[in-house]
View 1 (tube, rainbow, N blue to C red):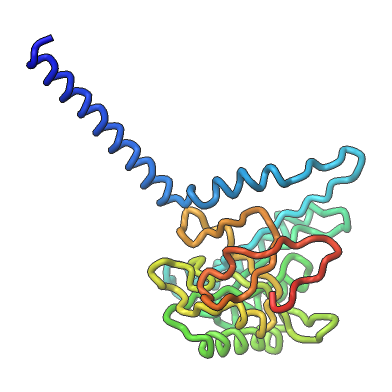
View 2: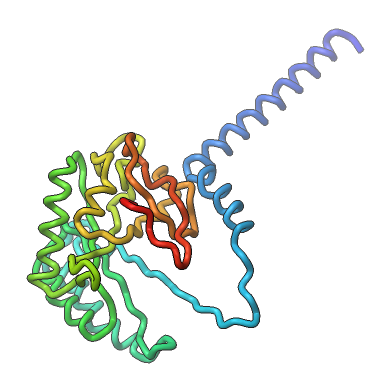
Length: 263
């Protein structure tokens, strides 16, 4: 084989390697952009740890609907936002009153209402739906460049408004404190976005705990880069010295075991 032929083969081989490298780079970028590098390995690991249900025992199925309920999505007029709320209030019972669980209860929708969209008329309407047994209102929050103090003020004021003004939320039967569950707007719990936007509070978990939050339902967030490595699990998270992304790890919840202190 002469030198020209060898040169041609070399160029072809180099071109093939280059194309393959570009292809792998694009695949890796697509994988990272969708958070697949975080949640796919976690999903595979979790599958190995999940015991198969016994065919000899009844299976209890729970479906959690954690709705980022935002009547003012896309900045509509107040009348349009109110019509969205009224559609839920009138249509939900019509659609779901025919269904019931093993206790005779209809499907129970969780309205995680954003503090930053608060208007009394929205909550007054949802209160009637909740009192009829069709749902609960919980707390949702979009915030940016906050501090622990300003965050605590927002949560306490909104919690008390929901409980005292609208007779929503509930008291813990043991501690008697008003409690709530939480969804973080833009999925940025514990300031977990790499760019630091849509939160600002590294040590967010202690604020939630101190203001009565008993559980966070922000996840899953994939393809966002705020997705945690723990998926399909109920687990406890505690603040860390670093603070940021403290909810990315923690012990799994187990039947008969109390929550670790400050988790």
